[in-house]
Image 1 (cartoon, rainbow, N blue to C red):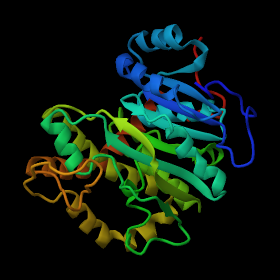
Image 2 (image 1 turned 180 degrees about the vertical axis):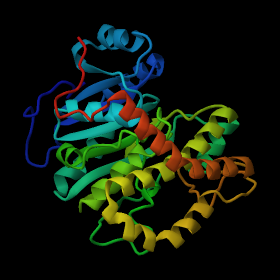
Image 3 (image 1 turned 30 degrees about the vertical axis):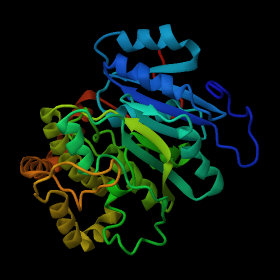
Length: 356
């Protein structure tokens, strides 16, 4: 790997991509993780490190894989408290890079992914976050095809900059429609900016009663602080979609729960945003209806070329997503209570739980 393990000053120059920490949170999926790590270590980025956060591990399988196969090329952190946002906060605390990038253990990164994802930071000092394109690694089952026909994780093929000083005219709900900005499997932040807003809300994300919303929370918090967010389709990862109908049902419910859980989290943490949210509430209800509108679909079309407005869920998945939306605030409050009972505190910088 050209830049794996290179220090902050190695190869730095004017306009060079910033030294970056890549964080991969995982839980008992060593086989998928190895595939993802192989692609990350093949990046052409000149200066980066890779950090694996083993979240609430049950076995030593991930620990053994990282140390046996990757040695010093990958840092290993153990985070015993379950939750994707908790794991990402542990990675953020241990990050040494000027930029911290996040991806998932079920992706394969294009060799230029990290370079394309981090280059915009060097060009625009007001950028706080950059997101990239996520396309399906394969479309082998009906569930995978249906997810992609609903929009998948792609946000289109046009580079877009979101500026809180100049809200987009075609986004009346800005910045609360955070799902339009990107997805957690392909995102990067200036490390200092993300730390300044407190990282991710630990009561959101997969692995918590809230089910999701951790990435959306991060996007909105950064925008609310006045930073720009850029979506670039040139930063590409290939995602292995879930394969079964049961998986898709779980995902639809989680989408709904994560959406309203993240909104609850933002308003709890930033009550000053409440007037802006209430002013956009009528449009928000219409947006929610469009997300869960019912239609029959054959799942055809081009990967990355759909969105929820033109290709909504089938009836059963629409109902599940609506139920998830109703549950989301409850799930968020349950997650907060569970963290409080566990005595969890967000880690400070450089306090990641590194295991030899």
